[in-house]
Length: 73
Image (tube, rainbow, N blue to C red; front, side, top):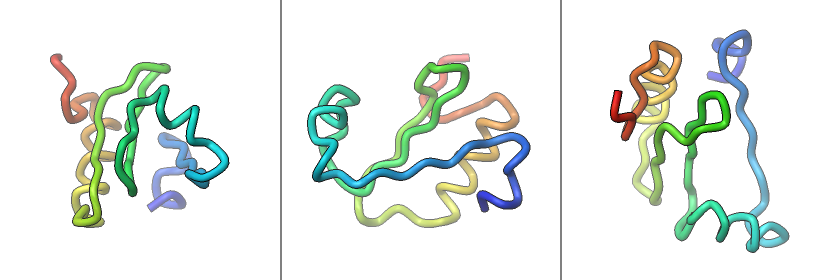
């Protein structure tokens, strides 16, 4: 998915262990967690072990179209 959206979306990953303080600041309490941001503002979050690739893809597409999960717009 990253290659398909590389001109519109940036994907990052991090190891939880060395970054616990940072993850706490982001309110991440479970893994895996996918955070969706636009212009530095959180627009959505998916968390838990049962996240499907289709859900991640749908959320990414919504963000690209300007309608991300949890976005009050």
